[in-house]
Image (cartoon, rainbow, N blue to C red; front, side, top):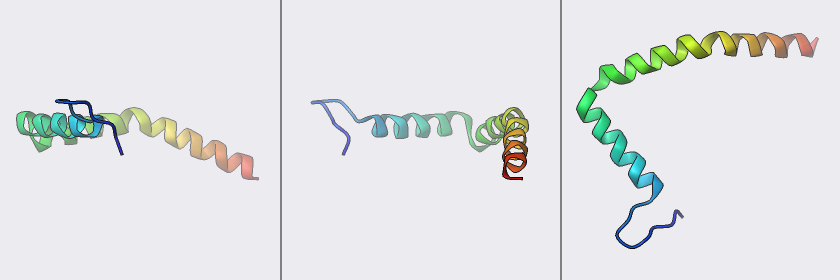
Length: 58
C-alpha cells in the first residue's frame, strides 16, 4: 500500500483530489476536449506502430 506521512496524503489520494477539483471546475466537456486532442496527436503514431508490427509479422 502507498506510504502516508503524518498529516499528508498518498499520491493516489492527491491525484483523486486533483481530478475531482478539475472536474468541478471545468466539467465533462473539458475531458472530452483534451481526449480528442490526445487522439488527434497520438492516433497517427499508433497507426504507424500497428503497420510496422504487421510488416514484421510477414
